Length: 300
Image (cartoon, rainbow, N blue to C red; front, side, top):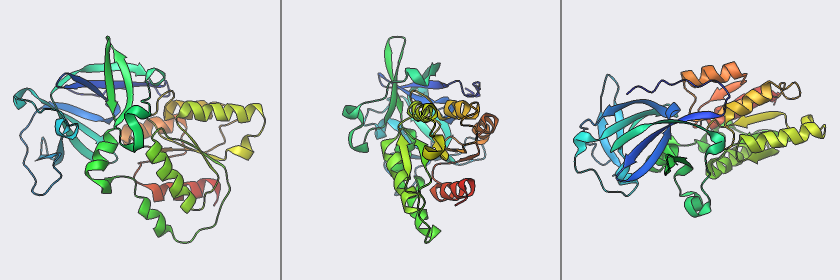
């Protein structure tokens, strides 16, 4: 099953692949999915994390397979022959997730995705990024970046790289950030502070960022409050591509550099970001490169 659906840029829509484990319905952004294949036998890797089922080579590239039922503490399939592999690519990693069945693909608006409250995602331990209702059933969109980082922490945000930048000047240049993950927002905020950027306003999604920009425009204080924008792509209410489109299509804001900092920056997404007018795009592990790009954009 190929997943090469292309959405028009900046429409605030996404395609969600719905799959099942037991009677539970889950989802993943199609932008993360390379292909869906029938289950393939894997080669176990000694001393690997218990949620790693093994490795396999569907073509000429080795891919790590994660047993998603095991990670979610759900019963495994009694007949793996009918199971599926969802092969993904994000944060420059190729990973397959072992699931039990695939239901289909749904086009939805980010505005219709329900953000889980603290009862589901308390203490940064939750792995649900959003919930959608499809045909009367609830589909939980999983945080696949967190799943991989929990299994292999070195694949996450490389905060330690900030130390390698050496001693830096302090800067109060105002930066606006849109990031829906509380954990990642805090890590990025802390990293920027360590790099000298002390005036960073964090918002939880593109909608909140746009509201702040609009307020600044109405009060005629844009330059005093925003000199650079950092945005994720995947966010409820309003995604980063929609935010970029709004900024770059508004004469009051189009001079503000926009940096897309997302796990989804692959060739196709990079092309979309360029068409929308993003000034720079990079993958989330590259926090030190994010600092260097901001330095160049605002003349640090």
